[in-house]
Image (cartoon, rainbow, N blue to C red):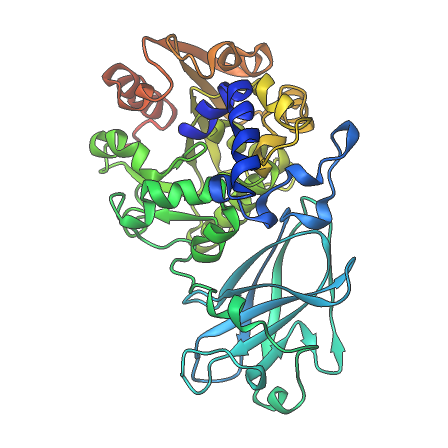
Length: 432
């Protein structure tokens, strides 16, 4: 959580400058694309027209009976509420997985494979559909929905039976980037994948980030069943690079460092749902029984939301400790103002207001009893300020610890790390 909320903290001046800029330069402000900009859709009373901005997720996999797997594009064709039209496309990852970030509506999903390997997805290469050529399955999305385990079947015989409702928009298809990563992939913490530029894209243009990186958990080394996973979650405009101080000092003979890397501009309940899905996949694959979550800034709200949302279904049972650093639990009053003034706005601001439904629900519900929460904050944190010590968050913490740090320096403090290390060793004692 860096520049994004610093800008939000000075929102009155920011909006004045913005209005001037919009008058002079049109809608180029911050390059927020229309599908990631919720401000024009906000009506009186703070309601939004979710049908016109990206607010829901479809996640799935390609199922194929073919030995050869060419590059494959997944296309979302929107049936409602607008007239049928192309909505979005994304290339699958190396494991055949895909994630589509879409407005609410009703969709058909198609697969188009680059069979002739000319790096162009063409209309005659349609080879799969969600459902079957005889019985298409549509998917209804509402704001905040997360539909996972969606399968698109590819069969050689489908090529003569399937066609798209209309020609592909070549300009939008040509600009569709290939998916570079997948959940559970081993990536070094200093990788360019986690660059500040990519993190900024995830904040201001989350759809572009989602196409290339999705929202997944990455390992810093191959999984080792003898080591306890410690999952680190960044805040807005954050990246695993923010945790380099911890990485250099973590006892990697006992712990393995994981990172949840996601587009920080998306709605926080969606970020929590995507985290649950990614963690569930790894838990199913590796069968680990215990782990810790460490979260900075708004990442703490995402972590708490995940733990509360998924306590009942058992997905959070493996999490034994939650350590949060400089989390603004109460949100920001300026984020409330951002929802009633006409200016460009990204989705996460909807959840960061002090009166937001997300803040109320996330703090009114208690953490699962098996999760021990350690709340760490910076005494010199001008950004989170009093929001870091919200009584609702403190009430469920086993310890509340303050340090002479600001919002960002809490991630590079020797005393903070020493306390963090003590917490891990206390919660996960060595067995003989």
